[in-house]
Each structure stands twice: as structure tokens, then as C-alpha cells.
Image (cartoon, rainbow, N blue to C red; front, side, top):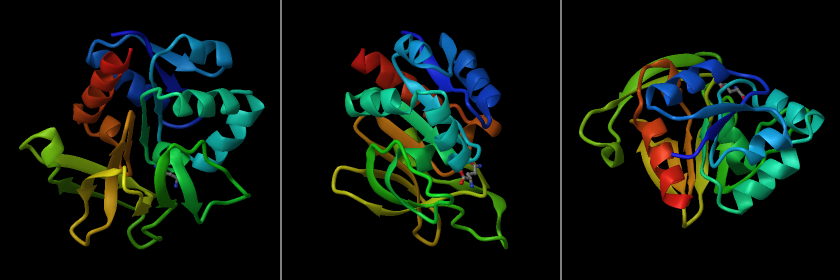
Length: 195
Ligand code: GLN
């Protein structure tokens, strides 16, 4: 597998690096255009999407990330990372923008203060028989998906929390904190298939 990157501007970078290394990947932290050029795929971590958005401009990597996504680079976004991959954002702050990629609308902090954080088991047939133990932390939900978006998982109430489109993968929750490896594995498979 060619080297893959974790966008390392803010958020739970270390957990993603560890998950990918456990799967045998050559992982680089990405903070610059030069870093981005070294990798064949990118993980965008959980954290605070408005801060990652802002820092991506300050570090001068925003446009290069957008171009690579448009050119088909495999990207996996968790939570804030999913927000950053959505073409449309609801409830952003400070005029925050996204990199885009998913033909989808994502609502930030969709669970309010009552259930800020929770854990649940999700059936995700695309990943096999075993349910996914999903950790949600001030998580977004996907409110609209375009025709090319595959819905991978829903909560019991029907809200969409995992999607895929082309080489893009996104989850509202954090597999990297619960020892769930199948999303990272799928991301690495996509990297191998596209490079
Ligand atoms: N609420 C955060 C945001 O808006 C996402 C939280 C997370 O990544 N755990 O980016």
C-alpha cells in the first residue's frame, strides 16, 4: 500500500495514525502541500470542523486538498472529517466552509446537548455480520444524500450516520476510539485499488 496521510491540523490525529499503523500502513501526518503530495489517500480526523477549516487556510493546504478530492483521492472523514467532506453544511459557525466531495448535506452537532455523546451498536451489512460499536461525540448527521451516495448505516430512528461515494468514506462516529478497524481497512483497500 502506498503511503497514506492523516490531516494533522487539529483533532484526534494520534488515534487515526495508530489505527492505520496497526493495519500495517505507512502513515504520514499532513500539514502542508508538500506533505499532501507524498500520500495516496487522506484521513480527516474528528475534532472541531470550523477550526480545521480555518487552519487549512492558514497552513495553505485547503485548495490542494479540494483539488485532490476532485481528482479522486481516497478520503475517509470521521465526525468533523465527515462535515468537512460535505458539499453542504447546516449549522456551521463563523462562516465555516467545507472541502466538499460528498453530494450530501450534513448537520453539525445534530444531537443537541441532551445526548451530546453516546455509544450504540450499528448493523452495517457492507462491513460484514458483526455490528459496529459506534461512539458519537457532538456528532453530525447526514440530512440529504444525492443519487451517487451509498448509505452505509442509519440509527434506529432512520438518521444517516455513515456514507460512501466513489473513493470517499464518512462516518458521524469515531471507529478510531473504539478499536473498530473495518472502516480504516476499507479506506486502505480503496487506496490500493485507486493507485
Ligand atoms: N462538533 C464537532 C464539529 O463541529 C465534531 C465533533 C467531533 O469530531 N467529535 O466539528
